[in-house]
Length: 218
Image (cartoon, rainbow, N blue to C red; front, side):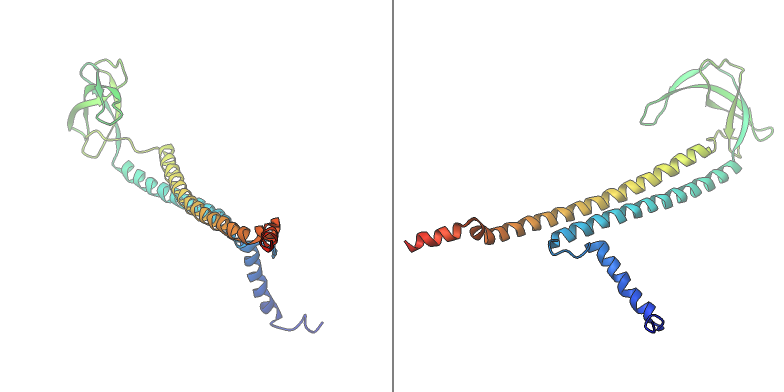
């Protein structure tokens, strides 16, 4: 009863308990039949699970960081983007994009005014079949030149999710490859050890050593 109430017993006992828990986690319960290779496999399997969780956390961090960055960029771009009306002044044509996809789009010459009293003219993307003299909504920058529309929330979410998924996949694959190589080495050493032990035990187990000794006596 006095021992249970002795100050300092708690901390003194908690440390061995914690160390024992970690040892049981990586080495399993004490077992005379468990070989070093079995304990090594268990440790590397646990390492893989922990690395998977780390990769998952890292992917979430990257997703959050990209989302914040894309949101700041979108807010800054929105401050310098303006939606106005342009008027087509010519027939619609089909243009091929210079990007690797080679996608085509319909364009038409158009004019607009931005800022006030500043005339602009350029070829802009328009819906197919748009006649001359039709007004089309476009985005321009502070100088009145045509510009891209600010990214939407869905586009930012897709970019953030893609970055996070890519980071998670790369880290998980890299860790999985390392663990796989280590397990292959463990397996190779285990087979070699089994062969060495079998060479030492097989003559006695099979009786071959005894038969050889008897034949030698003759």
